[in-house]
Image (cartoon, rainbow, N blue to C red):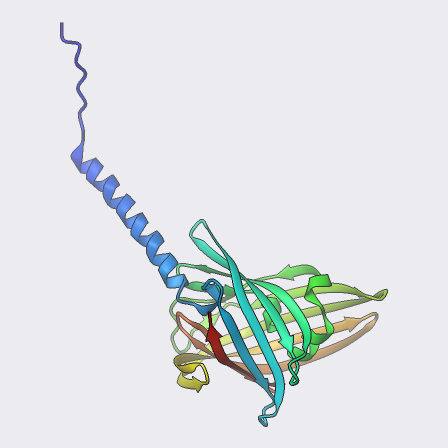
Length: 240
């Protein structure tokens, strides 16, 4: 009597399974590597943006420190500790923001697009966020591409007076390419134009603010410069 057990292995199927596992491993590693090239996705980075008027007068700066990276379901995320400084270097605002990346698609907290004047008035840490879509930057962008819109809504109780801030970024379009040089270096960028609609409500009074803006974005790295009627924000330093 033969008590041995035989196994029939379909090597063609086994080879296919191994190939799929290998491809998944390469995809997972490649996705992480692509995402980690963005400066906002790099651990313990100190990033500085200079802010000026359109006439070149300093309005202050933005200081960002990156931390707490997490990867889940192939999505890499990072928290940004942000300080808003006036031209004398005094802190006039702060916030904690989230960015994420999935296979080279960068997704940025909409609260980071609140104009400086309104950001000084609203303390995000004390606000109740009602709606916050992450603004997406595709891994590949070409002239003529239409990008996704973004929406943000938050409420805050300011000494018993309710304030509501609504922000909408729409009509985002890639309009060309340009090389941008700053104190942080020179970067090959795509140019993105968009429209900003901002409503600030204090009690029954609503103050609308609508303007056009342009952003210079280095693919695989991040935003280098933005400009609107309210001024210019430029990447000036990365360390750490």
